[in-house]
Image 1 (tube, one colour):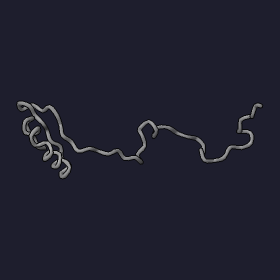
Image 2 (tube, rainbow, N blue to C red):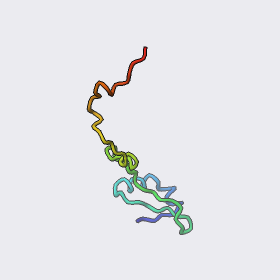
Image 3 (tube, rainbow, N blue to C red):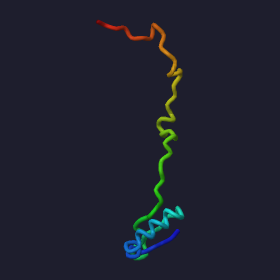
Image 4 (tube, rainbow, N blue to C red):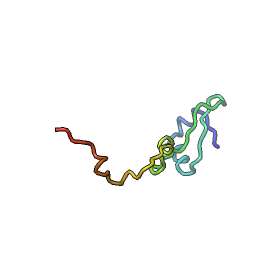
Length: 77
């Protein structure tokens, strides 16, 4: 992992961003030798992956199956 000082990061931000895009590796940004920030590649979420909470939901029936006559709500006029 590459380490750069704040001044260098400030003056070479475009080049650092291009490097992160190209290599996919993170860059530590330090002030006086101590890390203050990480420049990391953006990770897109997988739109097909289920949310952790949604994956715990269990359905005991086929939701695409049509309702029977006695399952339809009564219509009040």
